[in-house]
Image (cartoon, rainbow, N blue to C red; front, top):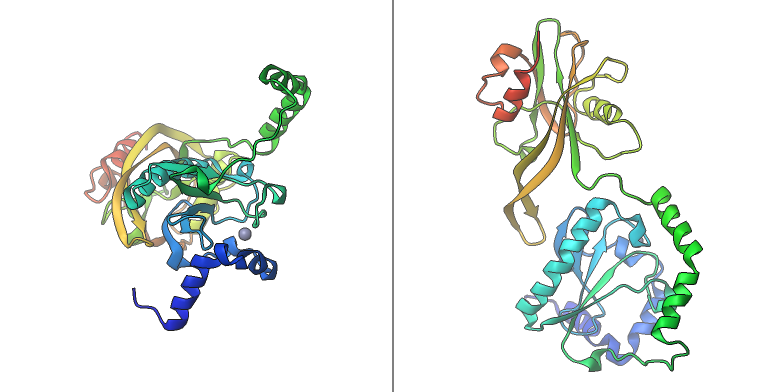
Length: 326
Ligand SMILES: [Zn+2]
């Protein structure tokens, strides 16, 4: 790694800050949220808005953090997808530390609140700390007042609080869907043509394919049809929100997608599962103005009888198109 003398000095300063006691004074001078402003050069993995990044003021070599890109304070604010990703990152973290530093143990630490000695207590992060010997972190155990049974009883006596927290969490933070839901639409005009889109090259699951307009559901507080209408408007410019829509097919879909990891400069295939609903909308005319959205290169009307056997349309979509009664 080629570094300028100044950069080299800065790197050594980070390395030694915990020993020179400079760390404490550094934090008092930082105004903005450092985790909203992560530097690419320290990030080595990212997926679904969750990153793995080196801890600048590490406790031990190899210490890194799992940090959501979003400025959130607590795990309760994570989406299902973010939480599932963090769960996977915990798994990768432990194996990775063993591979790179030959250390079998890992302490996973999340300090909640400044009372728990968290310096950045407004932006959630999990420390992944290689752990090889107790000298790194020793608990100063307290003299206990209560036996294990007495401690269990104290928590049991707070049962009203447990129930109210359980209900409060469900009403405020519960994630509705763990599996991704995808909705798309067969939009047919008066000439029995179906609307197909050419997606931007990097968004295509299969090269050279034509797909139905639609996409993943983000907001589960509205009907699925409303989310579909939002996607259709974004991709085609059509307003279908007041048109009759009916579900024509619902199935569990599985496909292989390419995961691009820019921090590692690599790409590899992974499987992806989702609930896939297809709707039909027949009340659109061939003269309606079409405006391809950001994800879309072009929109085409194709005769439905041609589409059911067209080589650029996937067998899955062809099968659903065959269900359309003209
Ligand atoms: Zn932040």
